[in-house]
Length: 242
Ligand SMILES: [Zn+2]
Image (tube, rainbow, N blue to C red):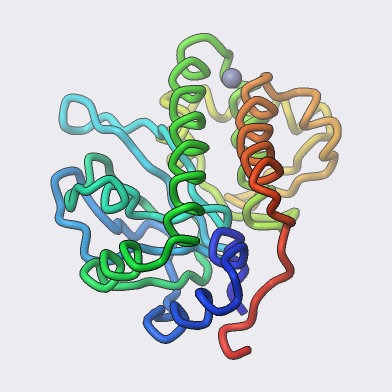
């Protein structure tokens, strides 16, 4: 069962046709799907997996600028007519996804109007997320950004528990390990999360929402609003073999 809401929002006929060319895969924590400049060989529709988009600076500094889960697709440059990635796409949550070869995706994209509509809507929401993240990284303190990041992850994996190391979180938030440790300890002290050896558990979701910067709600509203305006209901999960 793959619960990608972008695919699930397609009319049943279009979805069924795509099923024939979508291949189920497992994305594994730490796997790099593309580096900047790489040709995009496949697009990915995550289920409970998570992919982080990282911008690199000075060849070795990485900062997360976008997070893609069940609401979206990895490989957006293809939608805009480009075949290379400008960012690193790094799997930061192990889980299932559906993938499609790029050549096939181009054909499907050009011949399927509902898929085009869904992807244009998603590109807009992703751009909003990336813009907000730029402001967030500059203006908001680590603790509120960590709370925001945990909420975004919680929404996508739909589980109270997920794995994440301090080193990885440092990359996500663009801070040193010690900064991540302090922020995680502060949230832990407030009983909002527990954190043990890379296992994070969300204990108090409303409390975490109160602790996060406003960027969380702004981006969430953008995703939800685009969906509501398009008259799309949050779909039930679709089986791979309906
Ligand atoms: Zn923020």
